Image (spheres, helix red, strand yellow):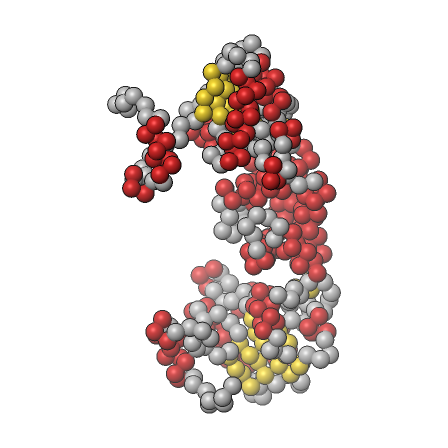
Amino acid sequence: MPYPSQLLENAVGQFATLPGVGGKTALRYVLNLLRRPDAEVDAFADSIKTLKHEVLYCKVCHNISDTETCAICADIKRDKTTICVVENIRDVMAIEATQLYHGTYHVLGGIISPIDGIGPADIEIDSLIARAAMPQTQEIIFALPTTMEGDTTCFYIFRKLAQLNKLKITTIARGVAIGNELQYTDEITLGKSLLNRTNFSGN
Amino acid sequence: MPYPSQLLENAVGQFATLPGVGGKTALRYVLNLLRRPDAEVDAFADSIKTLKHEVLYCKVCHNISDTETCAICADIKRDKTTICVVENIRDVMAIEATQLYHGTYHVLGGIISPIDGIGPADIEIDSLIARAAMPQTQEIIFALPTTMEGDTTCFYIFRKLAQLNKLKITTIARGVAIGNELQYTDEITLGKSLLNRTNFSGN
């Protein structure tokens, strides 16, 4: 489409670089912003600049944070004996939303993926091993994606951790999701849910 | 969802104000930006600031423009006897993309909508009447939405223009879209397409 203004085309081009956003959606976003007062547009633009320039990553778990140590790692009420290993901060937010986990996290910042050129040294594995080796650590929970890359990453870390010879190493349960019908569940998930069946406790 | 960082929450909140964007999509956008180099994020943020602060609106047709008079109004090859009246700049871009219109535009910047508190004085109607009254103007084409508000706006402008007593006033054809099947076309469109049938010219 021919843009009536170079400035408009530039802004639309920038928004079209966002994941899943095409030219028409980008134009819709930009025209929406254009209708707002100057101060609102500045606040919008500054929010992302400030985030990029000022955000920190927790020196313990590598979760995104406003402070050197994130709120979870700094919380004395969180159980420091357990570390849940996740791919990215969105996974932390998803688990936090369940309000059922009271341990700490370790954000790898990616998973091992030779096809994308991501090796063990590119993600936060060494710092995880160092944390796991600390005396208070008792359990490592894997909460990584069930893809080939996720499995590779789990296995790589598992072998490193096994050398420490003191840890309980677990992975989150895979099974039929709550509310899903058996007939529509894929065979691999259903098979896993049978193999990993748990004692019926009535709740 | 609990955000691990206030800066992140702020940026996500800003992106969630875009039309059709919820919290999860906004988070996806922000995390994508966060992974980019500083310079790219700054370019992204600055593109929208620069647009907002520096963009102009053509003093003739009120289309968005980088200059006082937009490229279309300034183009000596465009037919200045014809003015196509549209609601917003997206409509200009859509018509320009057809490459079949060689006249000029008039961007109203909205349509009369009492329910939203938009009256005739809030949109660029007076400037349209002034342009229509100029000696060179011969035809006004309405290309406004076929909603109650669009029809109201057409009718209001039509009555003002009729007083000038010299203009050809037309509206774009409404009918069955190219490629659409008759059986799936709504009755009003199909009825209009019969009433406004045109001579068959073989092309």
